[in-house]
Length: 194
Image 1 (tube, rainbow, N blue to C red):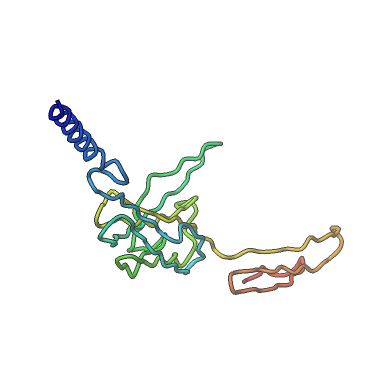
Image 2: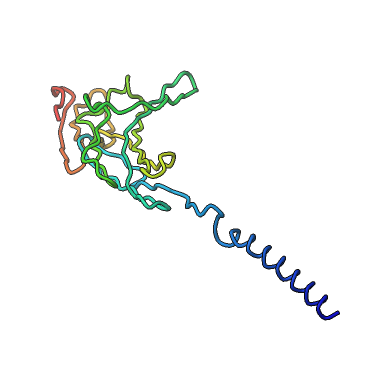
């Protein structure tokens, strides 16, 4: 009788041990042992003025190979009435540099340089440039950053109260990053060249 009880407990113990071994992969990890690869690009967004450059860094997690490949694309927006439509992404053309270029491509960094002039708004309305890093280990995993391009020029005119018969002078202050110019004009002055 003791032997029969012992054999039943022994069988029960083996079954419990087998169930415990089968349940172990569910404790703290996947049964395949695979990590989830993620790619983070910094800075995630920026506004650049013409000719300005920014260096992007890609951080890959969950992979043994931390390298990425880099790509540049852009979208534009067309407006019809009250409806706006974003175009399909197009590759940046390094030949003409109309929307900027990538340079100094490294395993985890790349430099983007904005074009030398603001892109033509009739061709590039609502331009958004997208810099994408793709994991070398898992090419389905990407991270990206978005850029807008600005002329960097703004003008400030103080309010002027005048009548049609008064000849007043007006000072216009024009700002650009790291640059400022003040111009004084009268109603009969030639066009202002800044």
